[in-house]
Length: 509
Image (cartoon, rainbow, N blue to C red; front, side, top):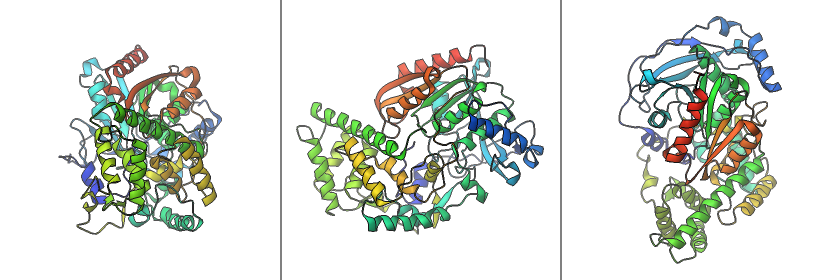
């Protein structure tokens, strides 16, 4: 799950994502497609397949036998040189294809040397909110012998992007209030929040779940006439990859899940495991400070400095804000979550300044203040609510969640990244049927489950849970590092992934 910076003006979000160039050309033709009727392993998946097969009406009749590729026209951020774009038309609701269709953006990046091609990797991107091609640069660097294909997930990029009222987004707290009056204010905001969110077509906002995205991916495989593929999912994309394996795994040679989402956990488990994961990063940081004189807090009680920074912020003695969010104890925790995976040294410097009443990020709050804030902005986080029942429904539940996370994380108290979703989902979409079911796979090869020892967004406990659900159909790799993703940058991990895919694709291309 990506650790997106909420509270950032739209202008800032755009400037952060925008790179130097933009591909320009007309959009290619559209192809409609429906997955076949391969029998899935689970009863829910079986029902999905049967209903889709029986409903092959208008959408099915429009299906073509190939997908046309062309240059990419994406004004908000550039597309890597060599990547081609196409458009895939699929039903908005796979259970009722006749109810309408949506056009999804598809990507293809051919292997660096076609003569040495080993297979095709279907990429499921991070997020929610990242475009399908985002991981192409890294995958090309580390696995150049594979064709790469992907879709912008539903509600993302050029696949009916989800947008919501900016004012409502900024009023969603990172941590739900435990006070009854403040919780009532959150409920009021959230009652207006989800109705303010839109997609094109409008009905898509109620069908953004991982099962729907997995069926879209199968439509892409069929449209490209690929008998066997490989699957790579990163962060939130692992959830769609997991559902794809459960529905259509018989078409998968190798599958790699990195930064793994575990669908089979409750709200309480979701927030407590994430809090425990962040606390482990704080403990690693504290140990580094004790050992390394480069730490500005070397020789000091790091926990005491952190608490002083929180008290100073709560007292209103820190000027400015953290990315337009006023400084508070919650913002200090958020600062640590954002900074620690990037640089322990910078984190220590920043906490020292906060404890002294100084803003370690002066001027950042001014970004985007030169003009009016837009009424709405792209906001993909509610997609999580389609896949998890995370809504905290009253102040008492919020208090119990807080007690559990504080027990799991005595210093930090919680993970703002995970707890924020319990606020969002109070007004977001309802979880899809079967969203909490354990992970299964129909592939005849095990799935490579990758995690980092200290991951701020998807703690390794989630990967461990998925590995247990897969049983003998899982093999695990853990990289000793602080950060979210980047496992392929480790030579040992990269070699294991490459060898795994080589073996999985030997004779099965």
